[in-house]
Length: 120
Image (cartoon, rainbow, N blue to C red; front, side):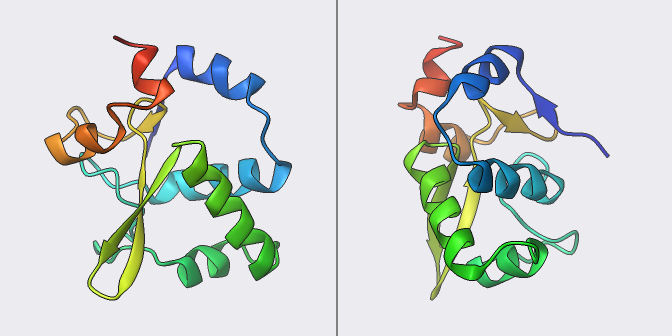
């Protein structure tokens, strides 16, 4: 299994003023990025909720996970997407991605982020 991490984005991310907890959550979640869709989801396709993220980051308190996820959303590394009654999360394909293609919805979600501007 692999995740693409783009070099220009890596350089910007290294300089990003970001809490160590947000970076830990981000790195822990990389294994859950789904091919082509960018959703954080289990291998069976079920999308991760905030509770799932907390369970997977069991070394971090729930309050800290919430703050970290909010920080990642604010920095446009993640996006929060309402699916039914649950919030689910997308990962910015200009920073990390899996697969050979990015679907239009994912691309559109992050097209105005500073991360996208690195490549345009």
